[in-house]
Length: 97
Image (cartoon, rainbow, N blue to C red; front, side, top):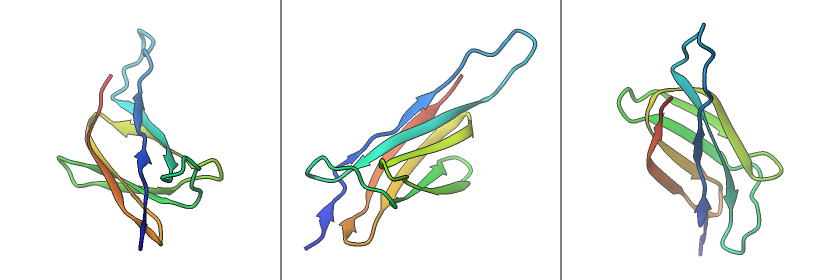
């Protein structure tokens, strides 16, 4: 029986740009937990832009955290996968500035 990745938290962060520069990117980050609340290192996290299909992949660190810096404005899906667990996906994550 496969265990579930029950908590896949993803947030977008944006920072105000100085008047002399304009940026069209933010950061997507989060933490992966299992059903007992423990963090999961080594989870493969994939970020996919819904409109372009462009993907990026990162592993979660020893604290279960992941980060995708400099993500272009758009709508994304985050998918988490780890052997022995049912994959988890969160859709419609909006990155804007």
